[in-house]
Length: 73
Image (tube, rainbow, N blue to C red; front, side, top):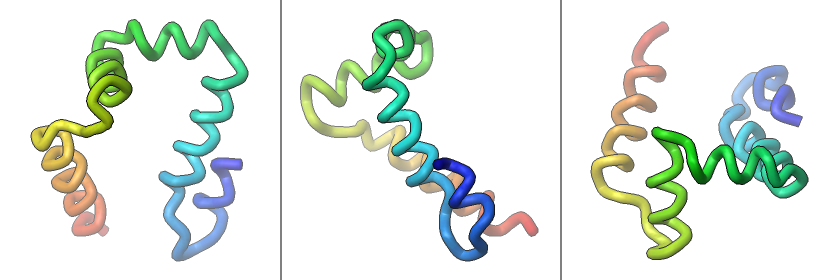
């Protein structure tokens, strides 16, 4: 499913990758527990599930990465 965004020009791949990851995590308890206990992703996912918000620092990081990837040919 995530290959749709890669194969079609003009369609971003990230939503398809996130959707694929969501369905994979829902189908695998091992993957779900791994993500919740992960060194980098665990705190962010736990905070999001409790407070339903994403920290401003992470939002700025993602936006800066987006602009870097757009500006590099």
